[in-house]
Image (cartoon, rainbow, N blue to C red; front, side, top):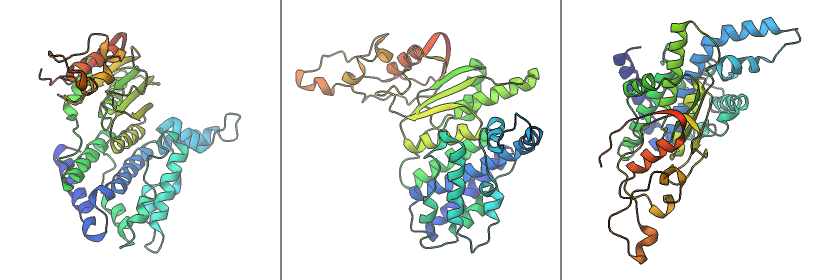
Length: 355
């Protein structure tokens, strides 16, 4: 799928989703969640379809032996998640109009979470009931719209489409374009330089998880070149302050078969993973030129003060002590990248700093 085809697909999908504003009583920020949930389901189904033959073959081979395993266990081992028949995209798409399709989608999402605990509470469920208040056919319309995502659309395209939608939803609500995401070409270059074959990868401002997806694809490419198989041993850790983007990142790494832990946290003030000297690699594109970080909340944090916390040249007056801010938080990020690595760790960062 080339860039032009992807752009055409994005535009088509956006028009279909935007039409919901005329047919439901929800704002775009409210129907973005069920829309993005169905895009996740379509990509998950695409991936499951690629592994289904392998899964069934292994299941048949072990059936009746001492090594017999339930189908869902084999699916999780091979694919990273399990889609029971009632959670398959075509099953939902082909349900007759008179069926409660909103309930069927909820049941599908609930069972995906059941077999993939890392997704618990992440996938939309009750949101599909809300779409039917004024028009019961809307869930069916959405399923039809996103059925056009081709089978060969990769997990990386999944992230691109998600990000395109997030930006458009934000613009529709006057939010200035929402989150910022690193171009895929830049991420790929960073991953090729740092070469994260195995170990732990940390992104303290992970957005939709694009750095992690590219790391997985780098490993897959290397395996093919070397004709090697086996577990890469890669585990990813991400922090992101926006809850909706955390959910997106969790779905993104799930659909790409990555092992990892993504948590909601404001990295300036929260250290979700006790990150000091913990990781093999740091890959990130942090927010630039933030100057409102509270000094008193970071000056005693070993992540930031190991190499010195930047301070304003003039001393704050007593009455302003608790409100004093760091003059440029870019220095905090540089400290964090250095202190998060193990002694022999490697980092690659989008460096667009202005000091």
